[in-house]
Amino acid sequence: MAETFKRRAPSQWGEGAVLKEEILAAAARLLAESGREEALSLRAVAREVGISAPSVYLHFKDRSELVATVTLRACEKLVAELRETRARAAERGPREALRTMGRRYCTFALENPRRYRLMFGVERIAGPREQGAGHPVTLVLGAWEEALAALPPSRRGRMDGGQDALLLWSALHGIVTIAMALPFEADPDGLARRADELLARIVAG
Image 1: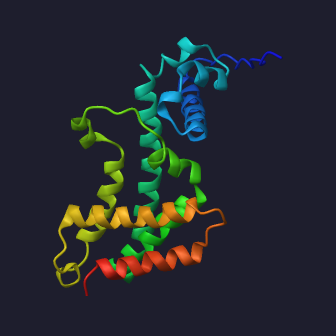
Image 2: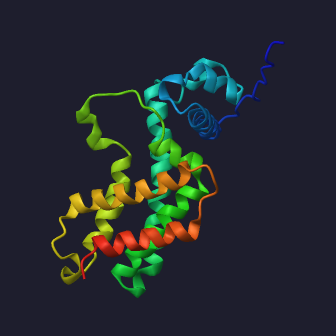
C-alpha cells in the first residue's frame, strides 16, 4: 500500500519563519530516529513536513547546513538551562553553583533523551578538522569554562581552565551515557550523587 502524502497548507506572507521551525523539528525527529546524519535526506524531511523538497532549499542550502542548525539549537537549549541553573544558585557561592549545574546537566539528559542524542549520539559525516573550532558543542564547553573560572583561586587549585572544563564535561557525559545505555530505568538521584562525587574530586579544596 502506497504511503499517503499529507501536503501542508501553503504558508501565508510572513510565515516563512514558521515553516523553517517545522523543517528543523522534522529533521530533528528523523535524525534522532535513525541516529545517522548520512541517512537524513532533504526529501524525507520535506515529506515529513508535507512540502515539496525544493521548499526546503528556501531555508537551508543543503543537508549539512540543516543538520548544523539542528545541532546548534539543541546545544543552545542545553547551555541556556545550564547558565540559568548556575545563575539561580550563584548566591550560594560559585562551588555550589557548579554542583547545581552538574546536576542539571544530568537531569537535562534524562528528561530530553532525543535532544541529547542529537548533540552527542548521531553518527556524523566527517569533515575537515579545522571546522571543529566552530562546532556548536563548543558552546557547551564554554559554559563549563565559565563555571570553573568563577571559582576562587583557593578552590581552583592547580586547575587548567579549558583542559579541566573538558575533563569535567567528558566525565559527566560518560556518567550520563552509561546510565542511559543500561537496560533499565535510570536513577536520577543516584546520577546526581555521582555527579556530586565527581565534582568534589575534580574541584580542589
